[in-house]
Image (cartoon, rainbow over all chains, first blue to last red; front, side, top):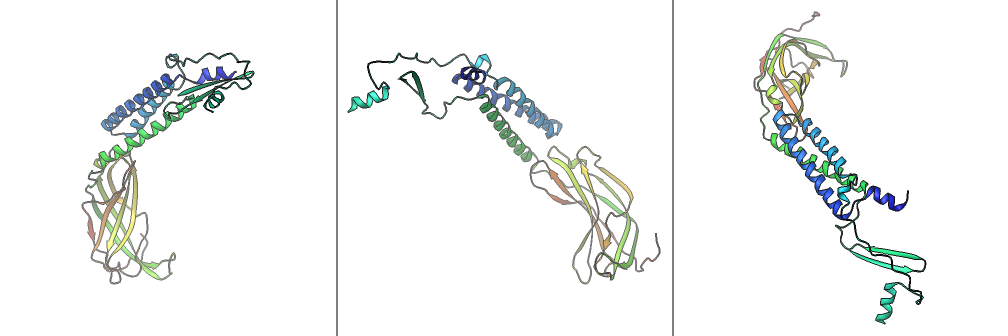
Length: 101
Length: 203
């Protein structure tokens, strides 16, 4: 598996990862609140913990794998520029320092 | 975020300069970690609020204690000095409804029955003679008849024979999911007198 394949398999784009995190927090918090209310009603705190656990599993399934909806705004990379054969040193940074001198 | 690109010989090098700490590429592992950490934080918060909902509960209740048989012996205490000490013995009844003590922040109650009395050498003697654990979900209505003590009721001398004022009290320790562990003494106790004569026969 090449580096790009690995990247594709595990990563989202920046917008996707922000949404995934927000989404996971909403799910956990929602299950936490519902679990708390239900646990209070039946006076059983273990049910609260169990419902929170269900929220954790749901959030894990929905926000940990890089589903396609988290890959809609991929970064637009610049194209690789051709090598300038004329100059010995070709890095843009070095060029800039030379100019300053 | 800055993206700087070099074209250096046969290689093309791309440097991504990330100046903001919010903008980072997350792997699936990073997301697992963040999710687990957030879930645990929420759980800690819920546990704290659970504690708050029960922090001001009144864990007191009534208990009805009665002695059926009371006797006192004078026998050597081999576990201590081998000298003859007073050992009390009683058969007692115990009645208490502890159901109101349970709520979602109570895991179990530790009940213990204490005998309190005064002797010439000690102003206050306290001896635990019986205990019981009630876990949540178990029957919390106590209606015991003719219980024998679980632990020996030793005096550290001869203070029990003819003692006119021995008090039996039921106390409990509330063990919560989260919060403090209150110790309470039941309302209602039982006072009794030990006989003037030692019992020498076996029961």
